[in-house]
Length: 411
Image (tube, rainbow, N blue to C red; front, side, top):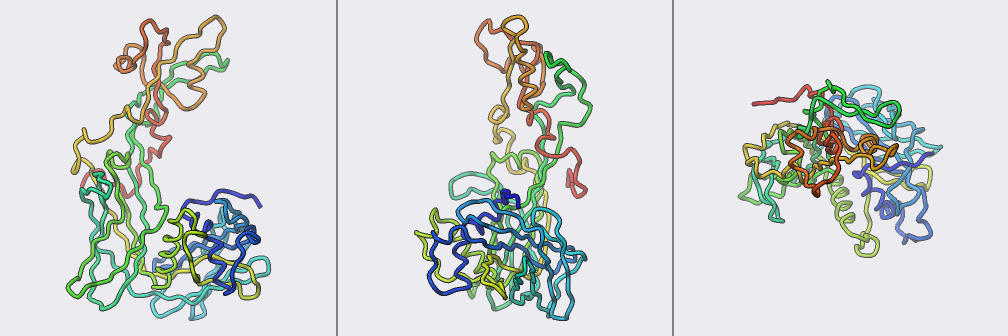
């Protein structure tokens, strides 16, 4: 099976995999002799959102590496306490999606079942722990602990219940990209490969949008004092030099009300992954997931969650918080180059090399304002065209020029 890089979000599980082998046994574990043992890694949960849910499976063979192989030949099901069974099919990269849309319901329990190479893996029966209602989501100007000014995305939670609650937050952020040096022309290399010609570039290359999912979940808990009824959680902090907030930014924040055991699992994982050497510097004790092999000694790492969910989206106009002069100048992340001319007859044209590299593209000629922005020694032989980093010319290298359906330009 081909080995591929896994997403950063799951590297914590992989790097700490050996610790979770303690889930199934009490005796000490020999890290070195078993360093290449196979460990099934399970990611996934079911929420009260009516949708197709996903489970991710991979198989780790080297617990000191951030590589693994995706499991593509498993039978995956979620079984409800009322007898309903929701089967999953493999899509790609070890991700399994339910055939049908469904949602977790209060009063029922759910159990994950995985059949792989003759081994059955079962989770404990999990249930919804109350209703998740997200509070106000706001953006505000803050200074972080490092003294850096930026925009903080916060949410408020309130409770009248005399109990501690546990939350996990994921988010999807979408931001507008404006190419600072975009033009209506581009350079293409001629068929003979010796010269480059200027042609029209009719496609929209100046304004784009990009969406990124959160890499790691944010964990929060309510531990109310007698005089406390509200909490404010900072979920995301974007410093002023973050290009995501240079023009317009939107975040879809998802809040999940999770079980105490799930919270402890993720919190412990987070604490251990923060150590440079979790094995020698941090004594883990016994860490318990909720998935085990029922007919084998195979090791499995993961936690199957059942949670209620709620979400809210906000848009942020950075100019409500900053002045244009507060943002980094284009010269801090865009470089202009002015390719020279061939030094002798039949020599390769330097301009062709720049264009063929795919890293630079046309922004202007020797009569454009950009010429004054390039500091060259006197009498330097230069060609007819000035170039810039492709990402500063064609925004499609960083996103898509198709505006998302949910996007609101002005509120």
